[in-house]
Length: 166
Image (cartoon, rainbow, N blue to C red; front, top):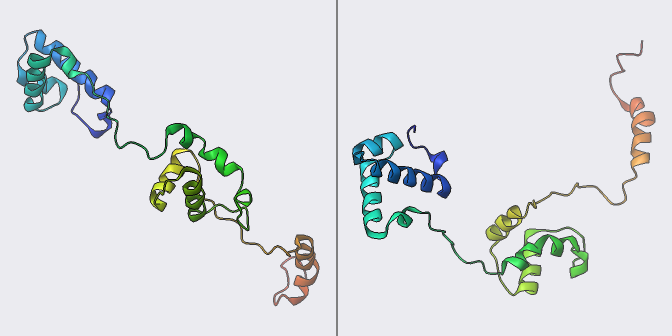
């Protein structure tokens, strides 16, 4: 096995490497040789061997890491896209534009939990949602009139004539 790199840090790969080390140790290979073959330090193999002696082969299995518990149950978090799909107008905002402060206000009202803007941003990313900047356009803007002006009026005001004209 080649040298250890950061891309091999997932728990399944680490467990597989430890179990392969167990197999090599049971074949009678030295700790230094196992370390060299697996691309780990001899101290790691020594730790594995001690763990096997204390707890058996199960001691080398990956232990699930729960991390910090969520503030809101996962079922409610899964409903976040549906909550936002109802639109900002349905929650009493003047426009249908979602902003992080608005989402924070709604989730605090609905779930009774206060998130920081950064935590809410990460939560939105986890659900595949992203912050979208709306196109800035006046409500009164008439696109037909703008196009008409560009094709008919604008050429009269240009300083340089078109290259196609003589």
